Image (cartoon, rainbow, N blue to C red):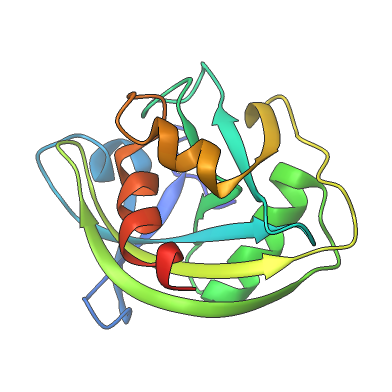
Length: 171
């Protein structure tokens, strides 16, 4: 992880095609003012029953603490490809080192605090996820019906709801 002199994590700043054009501290990318486009990866992890693993974001997260979200979500590091970041983040957050995945879609997501270029993937693994409590406070497999029945209950991140409705429902 690249850090600046003040111990802030450094993110790549990209254009809408994903080409790295500069870098900036996490604090600037998430300040709600700069809206610097920075890349992230999401993994939607399914088991053999067709259930989707979701993580509950740590209460220590600066954005959307305590909300249920994609199995893996993380920022790319400068010079890192989306696939490299996906493998790194999957190992960090869920202890997954061996899994199969495929790219679904790349899109720009904007919230009141940030602007992200999201690389969305789906995948499967024969291993059960082992959550890292520093990153994630809970995790479990959900049935599609469970998710659909809770979409309006404000327990999921807005970005997960968006991906579920526009990408995953078509997978």
